[in-house]
Length: 333
Image (cartoon, rainbow, N blue to C red; front, side):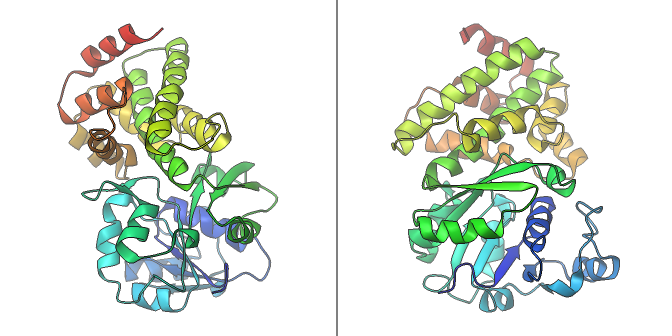
């Protein structure tokens, strides 16, 4: 197995586009790129940029081997970077006939949980496709695709049980505007990536309800404590949740105007229904799905998670955001 060998990006959204920009920043690098829709590929090649996402990022399409055939791209690649929204991952993989278990290195940049399975993506590949844990890595932030497009300084974390393989991957993700570090906390970082989306929805709801910066600071203080409590129970290892992969990702997702989850939550706080907010956004807010999945998972662990519960009640039980957040504020100190 070659690590990273030939790299393939699996997905055509904004984060996939940002990752492609990072990889192709290295002179002479070429990549494979799986995009489901053939018409998008044709437009991409004709225009020299992704026709739907981060349209200001120009690419030398001669350095990209595009395909809409998932089996072709898997056969021709050594490292597969999955960047599809979590609700669609299973549908993509159902078309896959090529085995992943032995000679492929899997990296997930999906910040969500596989619905119906209630598994983080690394666990899904390990349990359903027999990919060895040491051949799976996670790419984490804090990092918005839009800022990568602008070449603003950004920090990434690659988490993998095999640190040598992680180092090989890190070399591909380091350039003048991205700095990349290594971790072995694959499960913890994946769960934190899901939870920070949930807490960003909470931050957005509070913004929509006209709560100010003073309260947002208290909300974030409680959110990182709640995240730490959950991670300590679900995956008890020695970690520092104040590192950028945890707290940093939480803060940028909860505060940034680029955050889909904050935007989605803000719309809910302003009175939009879930469906109308989703339609108007035209993009996936992973935290909506993550909220339900973590709620289901937590039935096995019984961690006290008042912020998660409040977001769940608003999104799935249709309880008034004003009432639910007022109850939440009364529990904070």
